[in-house]
Length: 114
Image (cartoon, rainbow, N blue to C red; front, side, top):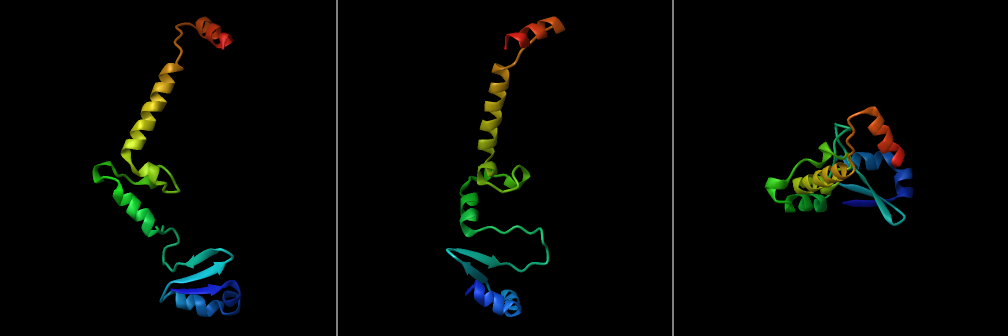
């Protein structure tokens, strides 16, 4: 992997773009790094090895695609158990806050009491 400074990038942009097609290139900017990723598809998503390890640590029968629920791919949403627990909590909450009224007058009375 090649790590360069922002000054090097500015002075040799074309060179480092071409190099990124052959090997990993990261630009050090302060304490952070910006990685160059070359792809033919602009919508491609890339994952760190740590993300993949954590995803694979979820038992296979409980795994699901977190991107179906969250654009960030947060691993909380990759575990069906978490989703089920959240749905149950929301359902319980909705039931405890539910109001039944058979007539508009009853509904108005309930709403006025809130």
